[in-house]
Image 1 (spheres, rainbow, N blue to C red):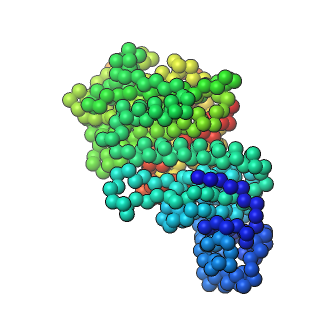
Image 2: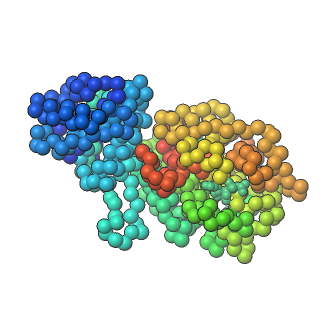
Image 3: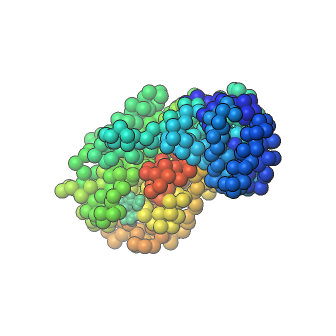
Length: 499
Ligand code: BES
Ligand code: ZN
Ligand code: ZN
């Protein structure tokens, strides 16, 4: 994809699609003037008529598509509603770029799009967000469609951005960031889209290795005997029920001038059947997406390897299936985690926390100064926040606040849930240090976080429960239906902001 800083006025731009963003509380004539759109008078008359006939008001998501009939060098003119000017932020710009790319380049076959949008705040962030939106909106996954006609593919080759006062160098930097982040999000989406019979733990590890090494990351894949040596009884307990062997995926990005190491830990359950505490069929249907956290931390490392921030990044992923095989954990079994704590597994479907327990210990051992874990951990979080926002918890309010703020910039919502000491009571076991599942229907997301807390020390740690927003049933702005790779943008913004 080419990115172009457009400095010509709209009437001179020769694009497939010329998009003008219009505020609800702005007259179209004023908007056209503001964009210095010196349209030929006869054409101006035609569009004014169309605007009236179609009652285009500039409300959010409203669009009006007009053919230009050779009166402009561009083939089509689109007025895109931006809502009220007071509400305008780079989020609207990202969404508009995504919806435009999906509608005109995936569903129709437009190659070049030129966007005229008001850029009120942070010019670099604004360009970056548009590039992100255009790439995210272009995402498709055709691998398993055999019919040629069924394959949707974006035809976008160029995105031109007008209305920015950035220098060519700054523009290029902003595009580079947007591109590295959004392409990584799309890579994570592909991994999530892969069905569990194709994307096994070992295949996930190979993907991380190939892509990571291409970008100069140090990638280490630990197999069962090494995992055993590390004393990861909790992780291995989950893996026992599956025929596919587990992998511990470790990726390292290092910078000479780095002052700290940020640990990113991901839940990599390539399929969650529930184990012997088997899930009902309709809850199991999409459980290939239970490795979303893993896909997101791996993809973030890839984006960061391209952007080279002055901070070290350590990625740790525990990858396994959760299956009810003959060797599977029985409810009531006791396992011992890497830090020596014993866990009574009263519910084998609460497997994510068992895997994360050891992965968190490992990230601590390997010198992470701060840890963020990402996991599709609890159905309770989907109930609480729907598909709109992820839950966030942890032991450092400062880190949580930072992540919520970066999420708001990146267009990903995080909502903090409490970690009251009382929630720990539900994890008391009669025979072990703790059990893995609290009382059904009672603060499931918070009690899961209380469980994880047992495996981190006093270093800043935040836990993202992304069970809800990681999967959508229909396209929504910059998120596609299916696996969304929610958190990659926030993690990247956070690391880039920590250098
Ligand atoms: N992977 C699931 C959580 C999940 C549920 C993710 C729905 C996405 C959508 C997790 O492993 C799980 O099964 N959690 C249990 C925990 C319970 C047994 C304490 C749950 O949420 O029911
Ligand atoms: Zn489960
Ligand atoms: Zn799970």
